[in-house]
Length: 167
View 1 (tube, one colour):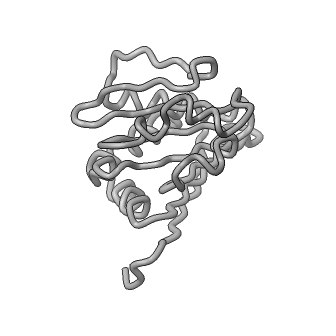
View 2: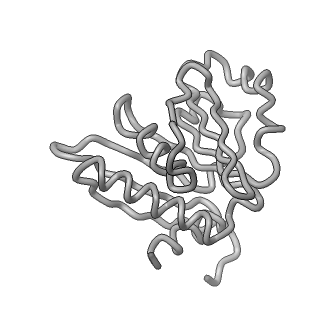
């Protein structure tokens, strides 16, 4: 890479079924681990309509590190955190947020410190209070299956997507 500024790297894939979604989520999790992107915090925004597979993808990601872990959607709790090795995975679902300022009451700044990966569904609901995304994941329904687009918005995000390509 010659430019030290933000690098936009994009991968677009078709996922025929849930098993392919799970496999991709685990590949993505492995790339996050191999790149050690969590060491300075990795922000991952998950975009898509209701039922597009954001929570399903997150479950596959978390279960890569914690195979026996029951992973529920944080629709009502807003945040679920999981301790994985030497970092935390914070799964946030901001769908029910009425005002981005509510994130202050959840101590979001404390939560998003140290070694972590944050998987954030409906990130637009937290606009102005969330750090920028290192990676944005867009899930959309297709006639059969789903399309997933992974976009790196930072050097850290680019490194993760590069590690995925190596897998």
